[in-house]
Length: 326
Figure 1 (cartoon, rainbow, N blue to C red):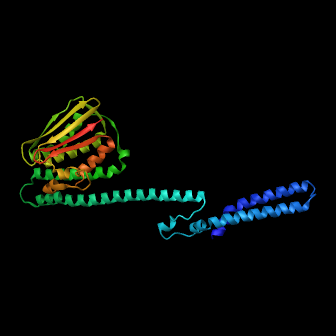
Figure 2: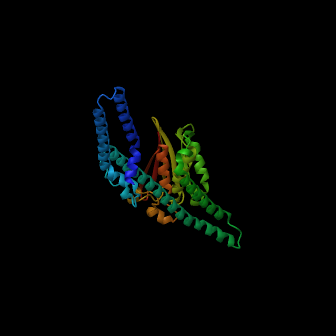
Figure 3: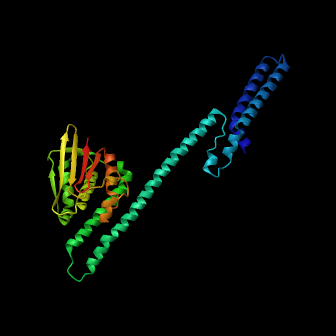
């Protein structure tokens, strides 16, 4: 099989050499064949050189030809380095690098698929709680408590928004539209969307943002990450009549948006890990509602939008999130 491949590869070379020999013989013929022995000697020497060259080349390439004519059983078989010529050494290096790139892409795809599957399973498990509460409310003979129903519906809506944004994150660049947005309008709309959550927890927002303050961002994605910051601030403020302060300041070409709560704070041991996927920490276990994906998605979106995202916290005093727009 290797010899057959070698012959097919060099058939054009052999034909070329035959043409060269015929050309030389035609020159002798035009010269009148005054020395026929010289013509025969030239032809024999040419044939010997061609056969010797091809034989030597075949011996050098035999292991390489054997390798590529036998289908590998494992990837290690395909990546063995047994080429001798510089061309085939370079070819093997190319395939090794190609395999490395392939492995990286497969690992990234597997990690993404694994994260999606884990998040979806966790999200479905958590959505069972509000669905169960709604079923219990519907089974009661007393008049339906619309306030309780609305709370559970809001919880489901927030969960749906999160799973939808998580799915869209895979094709973020196709779904992103950077524009000049009025920061106060975005913050105000986000607070209004979560006003029932504020009322239920008896936590009150306090906003200090100039009307004409403009930042470059994507309004939809910005609304989502601000929603994560604000809902977290409310959920982890267990005492009533506390406040959440939302302020924005412009320093040179930067705008800093600060969201500060008076909640329970984040332990130092958890502070560096709260933006990792599925990390719930001590606070998440206290509420039982955390998927560990909210701050992770917010961090990923901030990085893609080019916004700097910082968290400062102290247990018992609250948490401050600083979002910097360049």
